[in-house]
Image (cartoon, rainbow, N blue to C red):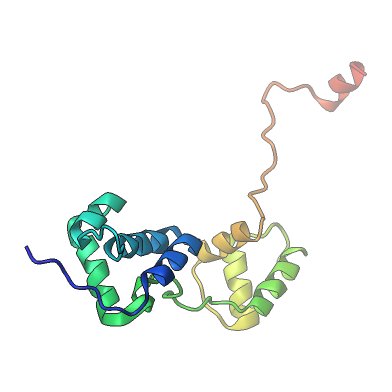
Length: 163
């Protein structure tokens, strides 16, 4: 089988520098494959390099093909920053946190549905009650319920006798 060529976007020294200085594990593995393929003394095939790093042979070839087609930027993790924008801005989240420090408008304790209603009224953002509960947990709040009382517990008068 014919070995895939390597387009000279970067020198082996630059690939070596990027491989050794990379802090992202997934990206570092891709740089490792490229480093093995471009070694001047004993270059490996993309298939062998992929297997050596722990990838499938097809993924080793895919990394080299992506590098050849798009250069060093092809080795970046494409999963980062590909989600949607948050429903609440940083300012709105801080306002929500400040509001959660106080009692809810209808009294009682904050719950997922109460947070969802508050956010809809205050910011015009409609979310499910589960999202309101998740925001409560993300902001460091926890479920608060009274401790159950044992059915055979002593009455307050009986408790005073023991003091």
